[in-house]
Image (cartoon, rainbow, N blue to C red):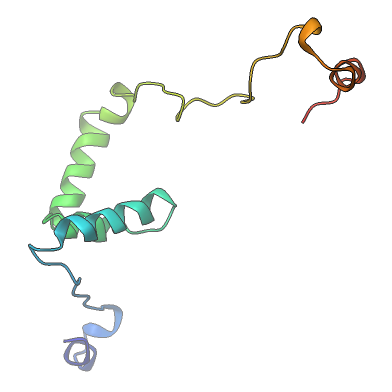
Length: 112
């Protein structure tokens, strides 16, 4: 398919990719593509294709949800321990519960 497309005058800027996805492995392939997306890989179109959504449908839904309806601004995920940012770690102990080295570290202002 790519050789045929490249031989045409209009095909120099195109490449055809067939995903190794069937109705039997759609869930596993989708999970792999979704995990790649979560780590920053540009695989959103692969993920959507593995779930049966075409390129034009993806572009249309993206425009509708983001630009027209503003869903990203209206629907904010709930905060959980996985999504909250902070200094992390356990809460500070009382002075009576600290060891000698812990008291010294607190006095010195050492932070991990």
